Structure formats: C-alpha cells, structure tokens
Image (cartoon, rainbow, N blue to C red):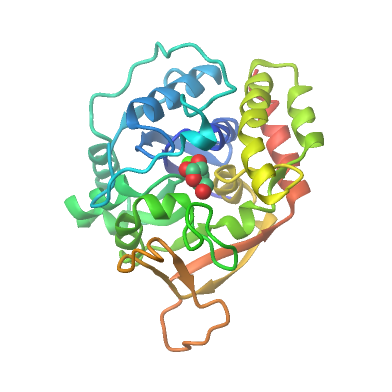
Length: 315
Ligand code: RIB
Ligand code: CA
C-alpha cells in the first residue's frame, strides 16, 4: 500500500483528538503533512491549542499545526460545548501547549502544500466543518488536480441528524462549505453517522484503553469517559460513537469498512433541512452522477483492535 500524504483538518474535540493520535501512530501508512484547525466543536482558539496539546501528548512537538477559519462561510458559528465540554477535550486534563502554532493561515498551508505536490498525491481529511477546505478551493482552484481523495467524517444518510433531525454537526455548521467541497468533483469518501454510530466505545473497549497504563491510554480513557455520556443517554447506546477516527482507520485498513457509490447532494436552501446530506441510496435517479462513496458499516471489533494496537505504540 502506498503511504498516504494527508492534511488532517479538525476541530478537537475528543474524537478528533483520538484521530490525531491514530494518525501519528501509523507512520507506515500515513505521512501527516500538517494539522489544520477550524472553529467547530469549540472556538478556534481552543481547537488549535487542543491540537497542539494532543501532538505534545504523543511526543510530536514537531508536527505543524495551523489555525484556520474562525467561523463558517456564511452562517453564524454553532459550537458543541454541551457535548465536548468548555475546553473541547474535557476529560483530557492536559497542560497548555508549549509547541508553536504555525504563523501561516491554515488555508494558505493547504494551498501551498498542494501546489508544491504532484497531481493526485494529497489526501484531505476534514473531520470538522469544511470551511478551510472550501476557502482553499475558492482562493486557488488550481489545487484540485493535486488531491487524490477527500475522506471526511460528516453527514447522515439513513440515520437522522445529531444536530437537527436532518443534519449532522459538521455539515450543519457549514453546509455551504461542504457543498463547495463536494462540487469540486474530487473523489469524495464520507463517514456519516450511519457508520460512526456502529463504532461504539463500549465499557470493555474503554477499559482496554485505560489498561494500557500509558499517558495516551489515560488521556483517551478520560476524554472518552466524558465524551461517551451524551450519546449513550440520548440514543441508549452501550458506548459513545467514535466518529472521527473512522476516517484515519479507513486510510489504514479500508477493508474494515463497507458502503456504496451513490449520488449525494447537500441542502443549503431550506432552513428546515439545512445541512442534510441527501444520498440516493437506492439509485432512484439513475442518471445522476454518483459523486460520493458513503460508508454505512464497519467491522467494529477490527476497528477497535486496530485502534488499540496503534495507540499502544504511543508511550
Ligand atoms: O457529528 C460528529 C462530528 O461533529 C465529529 O467530527 C465531532 O468531532 C464533531 O465535530
Ligand atoms: Ca470533529
């Protein structure tokens, strides 16, 4: 398997934090070119500093972390402290970061990295609102041929939304950005709630992380203890859904996941269904371009075995 050269665009967030750790623990499959951050779960000042906190936890102060958009393209920012806590990574109990935040804006880092790369050589991994990516495509459309694939966490197809009945958080916060990213025509792979709601951090899986007896295991245990409670209460799940690491696990072991190529549209007109990811799952409109590969299932034991094995590499 050819190593993926990725830019991880995120809004840490406990699940984003685990995705960062999984990427850093998988150098055979992933070359993490940089982490770009966006306002989402919590404001940008927290998402960027949380990304740096997690890199330092992993012993990687060399990783380049960039701050990006402070708000969506058009709509007002909606945050999710009610799920993630005031800090965005409640339960982690990490000190303020000492590694530097990069001076360049995240959008400029995305553009410059892509322009300096071969065609089809970059994978963009948005696991928060897609504002940074949309701004990059608007500012410099010449980066489009440089991108091999966009693999995102977002959306809800056969599932209801988690932020409105129609919309999942990442897409709801910036639906215009998500629509612009989808409209680039770049190979688009989506991990919606349909699959992430099957990646549940059950008590056994959580205990296995804590039993690593490492700083990484302790922080993941504390973060997910906090993060789990909301969805377990709302949905009656026996664990919290581990949304964002599904994107990184897909890059490492795509065979864990399954889905189908369908036509996808994103609602940006109706306030009632704003941010809905409308997929033609049963190919009713046969002539429409099937512009997205959407995952709706995974081997959850294989996913958590992979996560455990990789996180245990980080001391
Ligand atoms: O709806 C889940 C998504 O919204 C995840 O990416 C989580 O981190 C939040 O950003
Ligand atoms: Ca996220």
